[in-house]
Every structure is written in C-alpha cells, then in structure tokens.
Length: 299
Image (cartoon, rainbow, N blue to C red; front, side, top):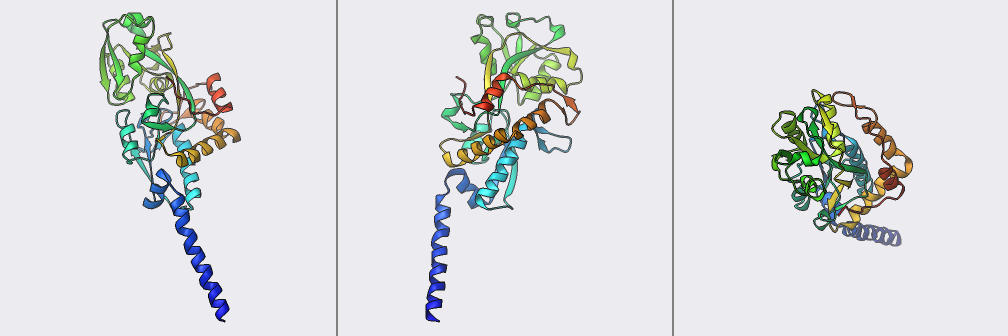
C-alpha cells in the first residue's frame, strides 16, 4: 500500500515538474498568447481582396483566410481550442507601431516585405507579388509619368509608393504635390473626385478599388511599372518561434494546393460585396515564390 502511494506521489510530482517546463519553452508571441489566452489579428478595412470589410463589417479576404489557418495552428500548438480571437483594424500609418507595442500579434493586410521594414518587423514567407503602378482617369489626358509634372498625386499615409516615381527615369525630373488619404479607399476617392490626378499604389489594390467603384471604365493604369514587391503576413521582429509556426502553416497551404485554391477564390471569382471578379491571374513571379517559399524583402 505504501509502495502504491509512493508511486502515485512520484507520478503527480513528475507531471507537475513537466507542466512548467512546457510553459517555459514558449517565447515571444506564443508565450504572450498563452498567458493572455487571446490572439489579436490586425486587419485592413479596404485592402481588397486581401483584407477588407464586407457588408456586415466582417473582415474577409485572401490574407484573412490564411491568417485564420494560422490561428487554427496556434490553437493546436497551445492546445487551446477555445482561444479568444480579437480582430483589430489597422492602417498603413499605425500597423507597425501596433505590432511592435503588442497591440496586435500579426498583421493580415497588404503590407510589402521590404528590407527597410525588416529593420523593424519580420515577415512570413511571401504569399503575393505585386507591381506598383499609377492609376489615372482616362479623361485626364495623362499618358505617362512625365505628364504628372506639376500635378497633385494621391498617396496613402504610412506608405512609400509615391517616392518610386522619382526613381523612374520618366519621373526623375518632375515635381508634384502629394495629397494624403488615411487609407487606400480614401486615396482612390481623391482621384475619383478630381482632387488628385493620380494614385500610386500596388496594382492589385488599385484593381480592387476600380472594380468596386461606380464607374470602373473611367480609370486606367499608366504603362510604367515602378517596382515589384512581395507581400507577407507581418510579424514581430526577433520572434523565431512564432515565425516558424506561421511559415510552416503557409508552406503547408502552398504544398497542399490550398493556397492556390484561395487565390482562385479571391482573384479569379466573384467576391463580396458586389460580386465583382477581379480576373487577376497568378503571375509567374508568385508561382515561383510558391515553388520556392522565402521571406526575401525588396530593397
């Protein structure tokens, strides 16, 4: 009897010893999530089709679907099926500060992975490749970057796309006035309402805004491509444990074909709220990124 009691006591002691060790193994974001029993997902309100609000004010999109898979992976990793999931809207201006100060745990929007940003944050493996372009009204008479000299150009606060005009040989010697929108939808409206002559942004984001505008045929892209940029889920810097989990989740989706199905859902099919089809085929660059997953940033 004493021997049985001793064995039971040793078993309880060994379990108690193991449990704190598991908790101590967690670091960074996973430790924070485990302690708070909450994961906070940052989303955008108008980054169609990556992360935006539907008619019910619910965040939806290509990257939101991917981040939901990450949330499922976190629940499994922490053995917390009832983990509380909070959704926090972010903007181009505050997304990095909110990630750095712990307000959000990951950003699921349309953020370019750049070498400059990697000094402040980290990124999961690339899930989209975009080209920075300029949209104008067809009636504006503007045909190239050179025609933007002396014109007001819309740009979204917290982004750097408009600076790329000066780096293009056709835009190197022009001068223009920047008008800021708080988000991409507001920046696009500046052009739609004739307060700005052009809007510089990633082509897919502009395509989404044009497709859902009142008169899509009014707009056109200028021919110049200012830069090609990768997108990725944005994470806190120096947090290898959480990044490994996110990368593993993304890579698994790519390998299984789920990422390709999500692409077809959001870029090649009718999407809410107006059931518009962006008809934006997967580029060779994204196919290459899926074939060889990486988190390289653009310079």
